Image (cartoon, rainbow, N blue to C red):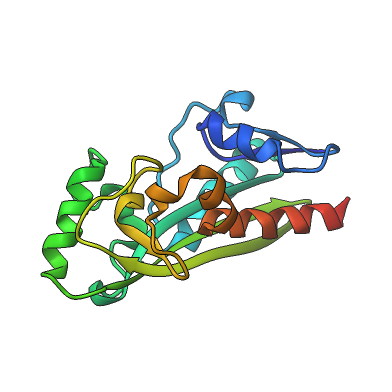
Length: 192
């Protein structure tokens, strides 16, 4: 069974292909000659994931899933959320995004936050949604050299290190994306 992962990120596709059972093969948007950057115009992670999966289903008629992820900060009423990558502007600058978060928090001690990842799957005429979440807190210094985005300032619950300090091996077991991916894979395995 071939399923399209609505992304142009070949590293994401390669990573998930290592996790899916052998009868399933994941393909990227590039593999189906979809060069369009699908606009994420939704106001929630769920809407953005659905928009991308629905685009592929409508345009190509193929089974597909997509994801959207974001950081949600309690003291900022869930911001940056869907705007996580572009929080400080369209150039998607990680350092500027972090600086903006710190500025808006204004020194609040141990601000609670979570990372959420939502997958939307269109498969054989049915739609499914899977969510992964990891709670934690933010700090006012960048620590660690791994990861990307807000990883250097996010400490997941139960840990004393940031995602950037924990390294990919640990992060990929406990992260929001890992949790959503496992739910998706469990569902696909049941369907085989």
